[in-house]
Amino acid sequence: MADVVVIGAGISGAATAYELAVAGADVVLIDRYAPAAMASGWTLAGVRQSGRHIAEWPLAKAAVARWTDLDQRLGAPTHYRRGGNLRCARNEAEAATIRRLVAAQRADGFDISLIESAEIQRIAPLVSRDVVCGSFCATDGHADPTATVAAYIVAAERLGVATRFGERVLSLEVVDGAIAGVVTDKGRIPAGSVVVAAGVFGNELLDPLGLHVPFETMSATMIRSVAIPPQFVPVVGVANGDTTARQEAHGQIRFGGGHEVWDGAMTEDPLPSVRPAAASIRDLLTRFVGLLPAFADLRIAETWCGLIDQTPDAIPVIEAFDSPRGLVVAMGFSGHGFCLGPVTGQILSALALGQASPLPIEPFRLARFAGMSPNTVVELHG
Ligand SMILES: Cc1cc2nc3c(=O)[nH]c(=O)nc-3n(C[C@H](O)[C@H](O)[C@H](O)COP(=O)(O)OP(=O)(O)OC[C@H]3O[C@@H](n4cnc5c(N)ncnc54)[C@H](O)[C@@H]3O)c2cc1C
Image 1 (cartoon, rainbow, N blue to C red):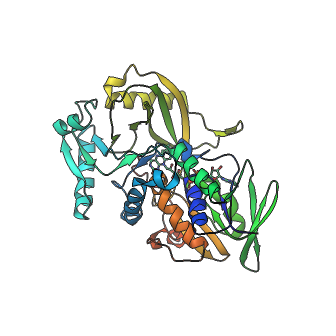
Image 2: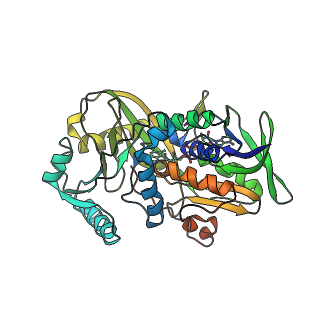
Image 3: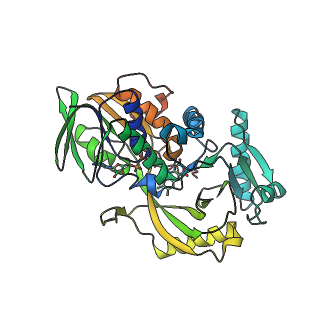
């Protein structure tokens, strides 16, 4: 019998399995597809504190500190780079948004600056000269999502975590009000505790227990170029989050944005894949070249859609439940759970072991949605 079964080998589940193993627990990490097969592979992978809901600040701050030496801790590269986050205003309306964001975050004591056109050109000379102003947070950055999840999994396996990929959890087993294990398409795994870090599919496992995390599944179009020589260091985005770009460690420009409600279309061959519509690719390319005109001739290597679990208040559910006992859930990250991954792992590990969370998670309780309007808030990400 495992102490804990962790469902989902995205960054949340992989980090949790690693932290549990560090704590000496007997862990099974299971994924219906493969590591980073969904949001944690589809992501832009910005690592930022700026532009966040205040409830996430303690977590984002702790996460950025944790990212600093994550490579050494895991013994493998995450390609984390603290190059800043530049958020641009393309017109006066967006400038007003940026000014409000900077004023609010500075009033709350956060180190973010309002910068004008000349300073933007110094930080990222390829950004369009039409940009009116921007916000800059020097302690933000980005990392390689697939490498990071792989690094967590190798480190977890080294510490004895049993990994089972290509195996789908069909249901959670509850006996006398407590988690007793999981049933998969290959058998049963008895366990004292279960962590559900299953992203947009998490409710399939929670609904039969009478629990449901409310979110709308949004689809964001993503594009990746061929590798080119180094061009810019920060994550470069815009006020409403519809275009965000970064240059990866090996030179590819990864960019995306534009949320649409997901229509449910997905292929599994064998990994899950959601294909973008031609018009979404066209619109993203138009916005991207408008923001970074020097890339008009950039060669495109890949396109995909990433699915986002957008909750009504754009912050996640992170909670250990009393009913059933032994159930821990982390879902609904609303397009910004990659940065938080290292601390999500620490929090979920503590909760699964029956300990107090090392960081404040009261704002992330599921019960907050009782009586809340169903209107979703599309949050800034990147
Ligand atoms: C386009 C896009 C851009 C983003 N940009 C950013 C960004 O810049 N910065 C940031 O911080 N965040 C960003 N995010 C959000 C971030 O990537 C996610 O919040 C984060 O990766 C979620 O990780 P996770 O491990 O919780 O979920 P996931 O990575 O979705 O992992 C869930 C896993 O559970 C598995 N699973 C599901 N059901 C089952 C089952 N029944 N049995 C077994 N396994 C199951 C799935 O196969 C999957 O691998 C972005 C997301 C997208 C899609």
